[in-house]
Amino acid sequence: MTSPRRPAVRRRTAVLRREAVLATVPVAVAALLGAAGPAAAGTTGASGAGDPYFPLSGNGGYHVRHYGLALGYDTSSRHLDGKADLTARATQRLTRFDLDLKGLKVTGVTVDRATARFTRSGQELVVTPRHALREGQEFHVTVTYRGTPAPVTDPDGSADGWIPTDDGAFVAGEPQGAMTWFPANNHPTDKASYDFTLTVPEGRTAVANGVLLGRRTTHGRTTFRWRQSEPMAAYLATATVGKFDIERYTTRDGVQVYNAVDPREARAAAPVLKKLPSVLEWESGLFGPYPFRAAGSVVDHAPDVGYALETQSRPLYDSAPDLSTLVHENAHQWFGDSVSLTAWKDIWLNEGFATYAEWLYSEQHGGDSAQKTFDALYARPASNGLWAFPPGDPGSGANIFDTPVYARGAMTLHELRRAVGDKDFFRVLRAWAAEHRAGHGTTDRFVRLAERVSGKDLDGLFHTWLYTKGKPGRA
Ligand code: TRP
Ligand code: ZN
Image (spheres, rainbow, N blue to C red):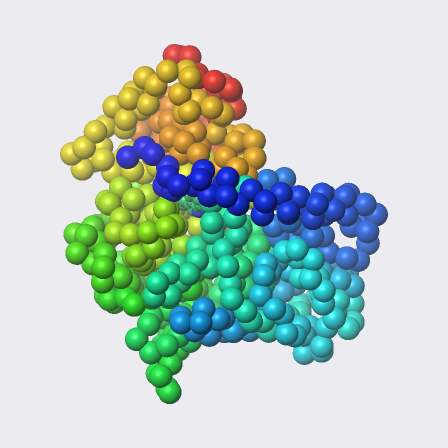
């Protein structure tokens, strides 16, 4: 399976939503100017994390260590009531800092229990604490908010964030949508642990990341408590709500599995979900120990979404996945979730790796060899979209989920494998997952690791496959 997991309808959406995209431009420009201006060197936290693809994603001046999210969602009115409790640390003196939050009404903000002033400007929630925060100071922020959450439209026209469904909501935040349902430092550079307390009408299930701590029903409403203890990027958080069949078990490796399946997808999903333990075992054999204490799946019935997401510890599918999609999303648990991006331009470190996992799965389970998959792609003419841009440099946030990132990204890994041999190749993958576990990677560091493990000069290979425009020639 070589095609990206993206909605066929995405382009159509892009045209329909063009105004929304343009409307964000002045804000982005203002933020860039602000970040470059003298104020940034002062005591106000920057409005972005410095990622050129998404200039306003994330913020400067602090890191979040923990999010405590208490949400109530009424599936019939689609109203959300939220309280977010953040534990953070200032990395500079701060008289003011931003959080990312799009839409919704903020009803109050406190910093260390003192009421704080706040303003809203586009996706920036600008908070002025009563007392300035010292560099290195740990602080607590609470934000209470409510409203009807709506998804964001990304530069590529895709919708992500809180996406209402006929029985709840499909909640997927890549790359920007986390801010549609909680105030966040919304960039993968800032990972944190999470606690979720999710209250929904009795009969609905609210599924988040990590381990289920408990559930309790009173007065016709059920509260689910979830804990994601390993650090997680905001875009990988979910709080998906619907009518779900639940399956729970623990794997031989002691991983707690929780599968939630929309009954309308149950029949198609069952044979694939049955393979989850063996897929995780197979991936652990290749990539090293599974990085989280929880695993599972949320199989929703969300026909308008058009993609799946590797939500941490529990991938989210818009319909019953096929086996290669299951392999892909679970491979992301190592590559993308445990080892996070430092910048969105390095997205091939997520998608190229997860796609190559599909090729390897096929090769080792009686399907096409990775070489055959490579050859079939390589046979595409130079005019094909596969060669539209090099995967190491997609050029903009609008391209991060396009074919070159997935397929040519995987081809890059295949070329690496051919250059260094299987033994070193799998050593590199395992070392990558181990050395950056619960942390971050960059393309540069991956290249240096591959060179260190193999003792080979690989600059030419990576330069050709990641950074050279057009179809690479035969070596
Ligand atoms: N990361 C997802 C995957 O490959 C794909 C994805 C997430 C996506 N969000 C998206 C694709 C938005 C298109 C648009 O599994
Ligand atoms: Zn993917």
